Length: 130
Image (cartoon, rainbow, N blue to C red):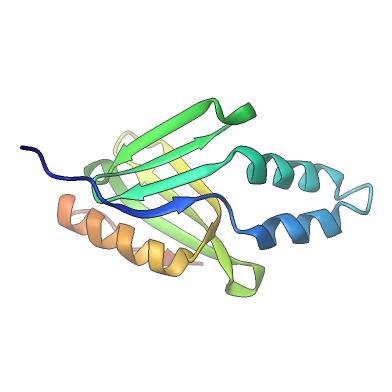
């Protein structure tokens, strides 16, 4: 009998990211930002569990990335949207990075991820605020 995987968070990016970028998209210069926000809102999904972080995205949600906590060596977070949502970058052992954009409840999720990372990988760096 294996360890049961429990979901901590499952969902898409914060709706505020879409709203702000749609407003910015009313200008010609902001149009690419609005298109990016629409694509994120349609197809980007996060699933954070007791065992892993899964990010599904890309065109029509066809790309999926799974990361286990022991592979994470550094976690950095940046608040966005007056602190209602934020971006998080996870640096992995092999030097690659996984970016979590427009993450709702990012402070709570960051604390949860950091707790799991320090349990599974004690030499990992603590969460950094920019």
